[in-house]
Length: 199
Image 1 (spheres, rainbow, N blue to C red):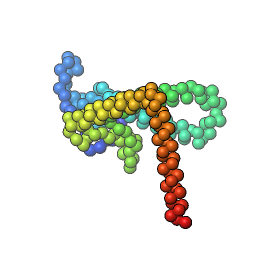
Image 2: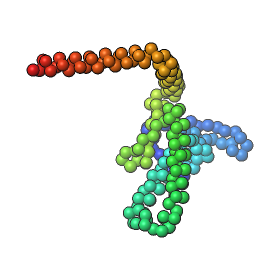
Image 3: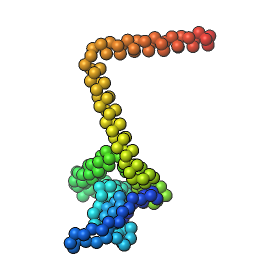
Image 4: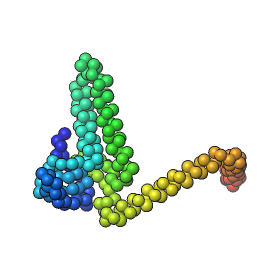
């Protein structure tokens, strides 16, 4: 895959121009959600530094290209080639390596909750990046995300605490059995009432 490939995004992109003064690397750079590149170069220019989001997108696009090539060769009868049968385990190991790498990037991205990847429509690149940062001011979006994470942590700890309390007390299991019996009797009485009304 061409390293200058840049995925399509929504109209609102996060972009920042930065002046770096570091000896030979001094200069004007542009930072966006994909990485850092030299100011004044076109969008498809080589990146000096890539973000994990961009690396994940490159891996996904390369995996898609590999699958297309594999399907094309399989339609030509590759599955019966002796060379393919000898190297099948090696190819599967390489594919699993790519899948694990993508899963690691995806897990970190979803944990942060700022970027979501979807397949692009109308052939505008293989993937489209969505983010709450595109539609709202950055400070407001980050504040909302922190609140969501805090809410999720509180809910998770509450659910874990309730589960531990239910497991610890035998009276809770007895109460749950009584609730199930009550539910069964209620459903049965509703069913009998419907039969009486309809007949």
